[in-house]
Length: 207
Image 1: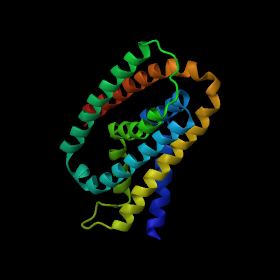
Image 2: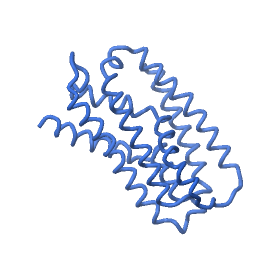
Image 3: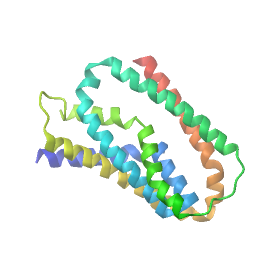
Image 4: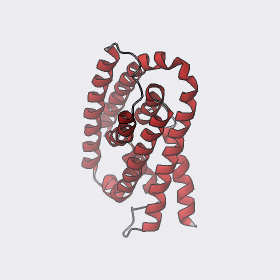
């Protein structure tokens, strides 16, 4: 019964946590526009697999992150470097003039790995799930309850996938405006990275 309660709460926490525009969901939307719905779904699946692992790791590391300030500072500094590099990358991509790419089987195969890489670069879910795990004492006690941990990780992955799937359904409807979206999406992603850099710097300063 306790596992079911944790599953439902974590599921909705992950769903609503991914809904605001961010690195992973905007990558899914951008892929849908540029490469089609199938590739967008593959990115979402790949990202959800990584989020499953991130949630699992977050539970196992929860008590260490809460008890050791040094670990939290290292994670924030790593995020700062990653978001800075991604911001430069998307800005350079936005400056390039190129037409809409044609769909290909090779790109479809790479979309799954793209989702996994983007999700792996986005390390913010780990402290987010750590906070949730701490609130429910999942992985924080003396011993681990593996049923609760598995329920926690699966709920985080499924909730995130549900949110990403909503992005697939929403953005596929504006396929006629795909070229315009593709033109400005890289600028949006670069701006998003800049915002994340600022937020990370503030968190580092406050810590």
